Length: 260
Image 1 (cartoon, rainbow, N blue to C red):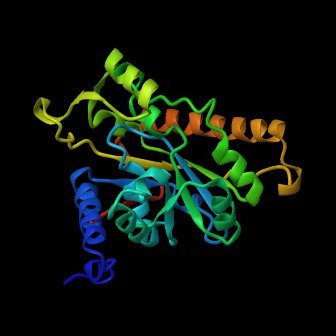
Image 2 (cartoon, rainbow, N blue to C red):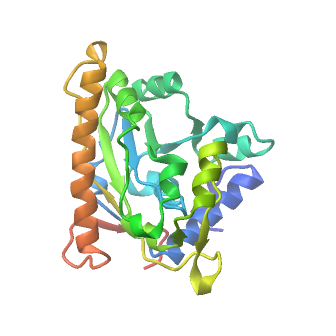
């Protein structure tokens, strides 16, 4: 029995989740670029983009202790934790509810939190808008980081948008607008819902620190901090797209899941 399985959480659901993450890492030949950008101690927000597959940030989180040197806790929707049985699995798999006050306190206590600010809406983007994101109205993560006085590390994995071909359509838009639930129309490998074996490269940018102390956080200060984060993320996405999966000569490339 390997060391990874020995250290797995005790709940059966969490063990299945861990095996799923490890299988996905091998299936997608996952690699991380820029792990050295994560501060070794203190509160940190990892703010990442969100594909329909949705598991790109989850994979990084699962291997976080080994690759980043510390645990990543993923912020999840409160609704997920109220579903019978699922809440226990999520908590055992390092997911935490997405309440702002508790997130600020966790960050003050030195935790690292993974957040996908675009959420479900971003994941439903049509194929013509792949490799893009819109966080113009998603500023809560920036405010939380500022109130805790911690940096934000931008994270992206543009080629995750190639796992599925997502169709922009009125049904998906209408259901989300009315009910805030996903109803995507998509296809994957061989025209089925199976994920395509796209190589996933996760890019982590340099930490972006707030310029004002927590007691001086204002809406204008949040806007300015948010603008700095999105500007850095734009540059990171552009670099990731230009590089693709051609990582020869790129420094600090680490494989996930031991697929090499």
